[in-house]
Image (tube, rainbow, N blue to C red; front, side):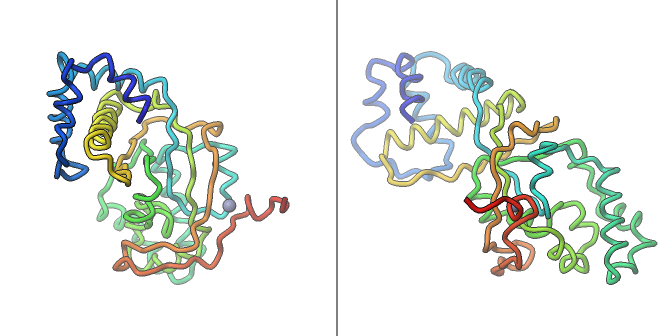
Length: 261
Ligand SMILES: [Zn+2]
């Protein structure tokens, strides 16, 4: 907040702060785009050029982001980084899961058909990380409970029990160089940051807005950017009416092997 304030300072109109903070509480929801309109009236010149300028500056920033997955060894991410969704590799993984679990053997001959039925190629060559672990755990815990969304979709309901027995729900922490994101994504982030700064400056709330923001990446994240991991003990399952889910294991081969301090 202070950094953004200093960055905005020279761009403010003389009466900018009065325009921004008229002395009354602004009854506007945290995610309302009206915050941009309020800030726009308080600064000089073209507001859009400011968001682009900020997006450009963000190119040099590194942001702590998160990725949910299910693995029995988080060490692989520290060794190999976070890799793009490779459909051939994922299909091989899917077939292995079917092969290794007798209750899924009936699917052996209809894998291609199930893949066609799911008909989803959106993930191919992409990977996603998010800016807020709280939002991820609250609304998208299925990535941690079941692992790959695509494999979960192809296996359908019969695969849920099996997937919940492979690996451990894992939350990865990634220090993402924002140069890896597109300039459009950085502009969207810049707008969110400016809106939140404006809300804070106007209303002085005692809570931060959730940062509901995803980065869609088109390149592998190097291992050097993976900075931490954890295994949540409780999750709410969005695929099962948000029922409470407690994994049997809360350590993987990587953290389980580390000697206690
Ligand atoms: Zn672990």
